[in-house]
Picture 1 (tube, helix red, strand yellow):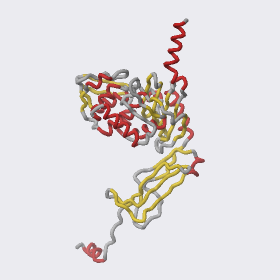
Picture 2 (cartoon, helix red, strand yellow; picture 1 turned 135 degrees about the vertical axis):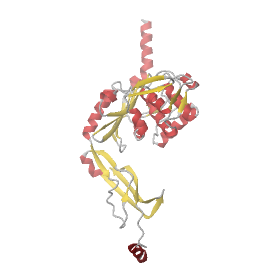
Picture 3 (cartoon, one colour; picture 1 turned 60 degrees about the horizontal axis):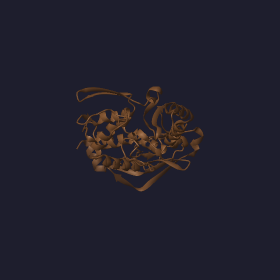
Picture 4 (cartoon, rainbow, N blue to C red; picture 1 turned 180 degrees about the vertical axis):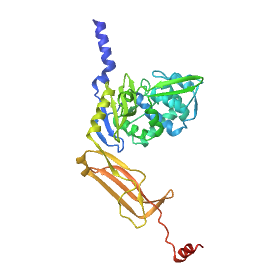
Length: 353
């Protein structure tokens, strides 16, 4: 009887943090960053292997995909999920990134970290700098893999949605995270890795993501999906039914919202001086309910004098708000006006001089 009580108490002591915690989840519009739904979105928690989204982004931003990584002593510290690389073997950065995202290789994370940062600590510094620069204000990172027995990575579903939104703007990351499998040859062997993200196979609109799990963190999942021109990102912590719940959330919010183009980059409809064509660098669309259109406001600021930046003429800024919250700010550019030709120049051209 005493042994039974001991094991019951042990079970509850191990799982108590997860028993007392409730699920955190969020759905955002990937185009605008607008939060469409959220629960406990600012609660900091352990994030397990969803850490590797940031690891991948830092690597992509700081290394060539064709760089050769020679596996070193760092993998002696790897355990848990692995792609089973060995010291002395050589792989391209890109192949290790596939191993990092598709198979959640903790050994791949360490080798990439040392290759890019010179050391694991050096790479972690890059991770935290990147996180701050993209607006992850409630996150701290202490390792590139997400294991949490010795060091911990903490974040919120809101911050992880910001991270995934930024990562999906990168074509290399988008290609890797959306791959169901990856084949390649290295070190005299052929490899084929399959993605652990089952949502890619179970939901035809899924475009990428990363799963994570440790005993302390529980299940963590970051995913993305696209349907009818609508791009959503969903993040959940402590959700054992993560694949079915992400699919349910996608279908719900795809059906509730419509995609409205609020800014056409080549047709701004802004009154300006004759002979100037105004434009921005990108279109801007946003998921809205029809009744929310009245809350959309555009604010145009025209400079008294144009500014030349990187050989382009900047004449002002345009800001887009929904219910007084700003969602987009873009510079307004113009062509350089043609100089008027004087009488003699026109005469010379007309007679072919």
